[in-house]
Image (cartoon, rainbow, N blue to C red):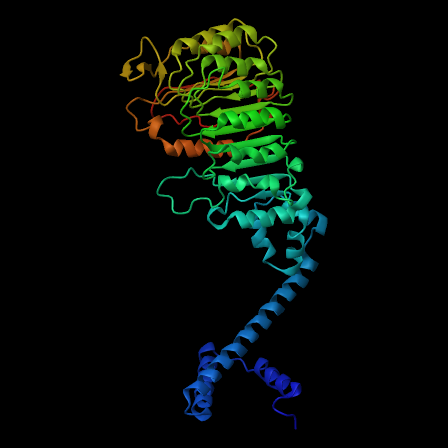
Length: 465
């Protein structure tokens, strides 16, 4: 007879347990409870002995549970290995386009998927914007180390605009960004795309030093920029000359950017040979700077200066007259508070005359209407017009390839630009999509139409083509 402590005896007991006859869960639980109570009653009157028996029982139950989970995962791995229709290299490629939170969930499924999910190539595109409250600096460093030299795209922060009452802000902050250049696992010159969304304390020059080691960036998006814009553009002009798409959105940029303060911005745009898309949302640009930005680049096809509180549209006169060979196809001036009706009207007349042949899409929609000498509503910024008299039919007849979006809600509607945070978030989501500018090519624009929506019931054209 086997000793109670021998492996054979233990195997016999476990085998008996696994061959327990089918019964209702209540009956099985009742049997376990009864036997445990008997063991406790016969053990000793000493409470410490009974506690050790209970702890031992819990330990055995935990070991049984863990063994069952391991067997389950092993069976799942075998099943997935047989039924999974993609080879490992394609599986890794698919995993590489998942956001990082989803990738972590996949890795927890089974050993086979975990092995693929832990491959360096699966972390070529690290996106931590969907797990804001769960990501801190240590998590970012671990993922950067895991990706190694394969890291091509990095997105940090929260896509949703933060509010003072937000109890789950992004744990990644500006000071952490300043440490990345000294992180031996961060190979910045291999990075192609960088997105920084509403990063806390990103108001120091040192926060942008990370860009100094990212010389091969082609796509940069910064949302929630505070005031050190001059240092940012200085680094871009000196270190990031290969950028193709630049998107920067600010909520509280206080100083006006003239040709002196914006010298580094102008230098960057002028000397970037591949820049095709430029979005500067909420910047206090002078019309002179706007003119230079529109004219100085030989490659710029998309220019978005929405929510600028200083642009009045005067720069459009120079642009339409001098940009005969300009590649600019799309111009977005949404919710520019001081944009004047007469400047947009002159632009329409110029298009009718055949000027500015490259332009295909213009958006001058404004929740507060356009500044007008003949406006029917007086505000702190002068008279506002919600029904501008644009020559739409003539423009459609002469330039059928042009789309003019002019959405002016009723002044008595609830839509009010300065406090409309929901619209800001919608625009932020549009920015994140970064639609393909190729959709505005000559082939796809032949059926373009004019859009003029002055009524409050009309839906806003929030998509920037």
